[in-house]
Length: 345
Image 1: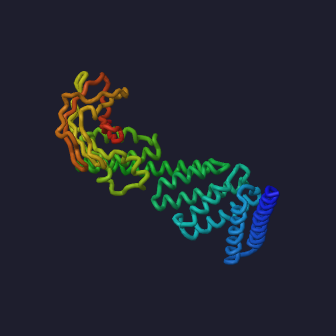
Image 2 (image 1 turned 60 degrees about the vertical axis):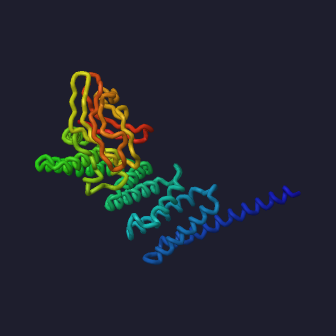
Image 3 (image 1 turned 180 degrees about the vertical axis):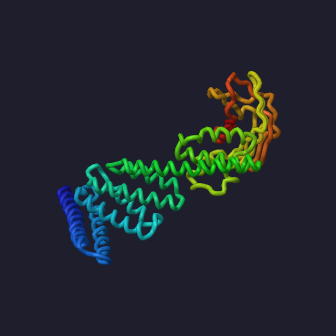
């Protein structure tokens, strides 16, 4: 008898929840139909009302949302999102909520026109991010628009055009900085050039001339700290900057001598990391163009055993090596968490 009572209560509750969902959907339909023939503030009010009721309907019974309600909710959500974006900005607090609402409703059955409309909205949202110099966020939104769209080609073309333009802008700045650095003997300009060409390659890895320019700059900057944080004044957004500015331990190699099966490097090291670093010859190794690693030899000389935060150390490092040319010097902390490298070309 007790089991039957519980069953009855569950059935009644289920019917109540279902009826609430239907009631909300009906109210949403009424507001939706009325909004189609309204204009101005009245239309906006009715469209908002439809969105609110449809949202209540999908929230009341999320496990059994019909396709019609799903499409209507996406349509009214997009209408709200488009209005807010056109009258405000991508930074409006409501925008992420609308995006979350649409994302929660998307499935393969959703009307294709709505998917295309959502993809267009995401691309427009990306443009707002680019205007606000939130480049990484904008790129991710373009990727999402491509993923969402049925006809992906226009969005793929839009992303390619954006990436090519970003690469071109940064490459041209790198060229100017390199000329200034060489002409005026300004190491800071050469380091800025090294940074900017890497940003260009982040957008377009095969951008014409970028690999050759980066190689030349690395040769010029071999004996200088690549202190991007200190010399790059017009930084891209934080996420992109961090993808280039990976090393908190800076290395410079003013002298590199290779002779037969050995190499001697005069090295300077500055510790920007949050930890003091213990220095042993075996914390350093060189890597040749074949990818082979060779650790520092005991005959190396280091001026201090530990380099504190924001302090410098100087050393003469010696290595045995194979016949291939040395491509970079690497430092690796004892616990393998601290890592830095200086690439020579």
